[in-house]
Length: 223
Image 1 (cartoon, rainbow, N blue to C red):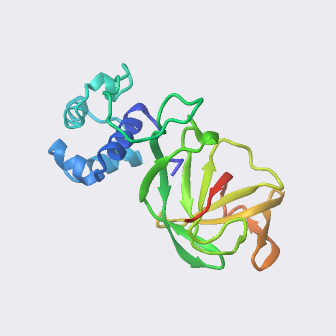
Image 2 (cartoon, rainbow, N blue to C red):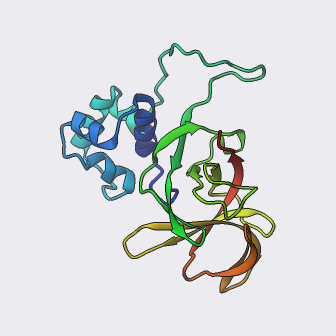
C-alpha cells in the first residue's frame, strides 16, 4: 500500500505492469532473473538495485535506464484507443490506480491482499496523488454509504478529521494489514472514536493497535 517505496523506478514498473497486463513474476522472468526480483524492488526489500540489474530491467521493459530511473521522461507512443475524450479534457484517463481486494475478517474488519488485484483510472480528486489507492469493500457495516462490492478511494496525504470517513489500519506480526472503514468522531491520545452505520454504534479503536488512519475521499458504487 502507500507505505511501500514511491520512486521513479517503482512508478515506471507499476505503469509497465498495468499497461502490459502482466504479473511481477512474468516481468522478472523477462529480465532473466529470479521470479522475486520485481516484487523485492516494489516492496523495498531491494532498495538500491545494481546497475546491471537496472540495465536488464530497462531492456525487458523496452526503455532506457535513464527513463527507468526518472533522469529523462519517455514520450509515449501513440496508442490506438476507443476511449471517448469528454469536452474540456485533453487525454484519456491513465489506469494506474492500484485497487486492493480484501477478505472478511469479522466485526467489519477486512484483511487486505498483499498486492493490487487490478489497476483503474483515477478519479479527479486523486489525480497526481502519490501513494493513492483503492479498496474493494466486502461487508455492509457502513451501508448505505459503503456497501459490499463498492470501491473506497484513499488519499494518503489528506488530513483525517472528525466527521470524515477513514480507513483504519492495523498490521499484525506477519505483516498482514487489517483495515476498518469507519467515520471518525473524535481523536484522543489513546484512541480513535469511530462511528459505524450498520448496525449503528460508536466505539473506540486503540491507537496502539490501529496505528494509522487514511482519508477516504470517495466511493465508486458497485455495478
